[in-house]
Image 1 (cartoon, rainbow, N blue to C red):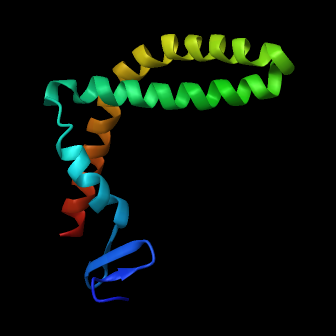
Image 2 (cartoon, rainbow, N blue to C red; image 1 turned 180 degrees about the vertical axis):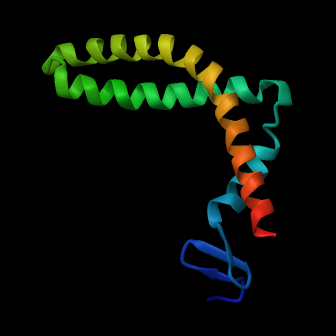
Length: 113
């Protein structure tokens, strides 16, 4: 540990607690990119559907799709279908899952007390 509290890629501020170094690097950037709270769930849904659709469509196109020059158009078509289906579904499901997780975590906190 050096005099700033750094050990590898982790930053220790208190005994037993550690924070990823990326939190301190990304925090100033993210503070300048604040969006209104009303866009929270649509943004979460968009990011979740983009990430899941891109990975899943890529994997399924690699496994079942054409090889060679036909791969990219097949993957883009699969990705577009994944976004068209994934965004509305995630828009409906994500807020409900977040509320469910908040309820479950609050109930477990009460049991700990």
